[in-house]
Image (cartoon, rainbow, N blue to C red):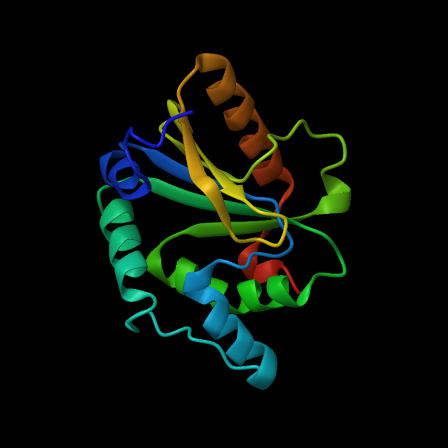
Length: 176
């Protein structure tokens, strides 16, 4: 396990042809979005302005990455009926799509026969996996990530992501 190797932003910025993200939790509680989620839960309104302080760095990173020919794909496996958090996540996904990410959703009941890794992850160029570690309530764990490059780990992750992607519903067609 390594947190001394390249970090997330470095891996995205050096990706040559793809950066894919697999999310498998129904609830996240990470600090940088907890305030917006709480506001959305009270009002039904969330920050979807790509130029806002919350989104500007991400939108810039995605646009630059996609602009240099790197495909950015995100697949989410979700339980149905979806949690409030997933409804919120669906609402803010318009920012990801606007920036250039492709996003798909897979109902968990359609993933029963897929071999999936134990943690959310990013896979870069089919060579490097960054696993994300969370606590049971969705906060970042310590350590919060782990970089792996062993061919068997990369193969497992790549195969799992592509199987999920093939079955998943494009964002614009998935209704929560």
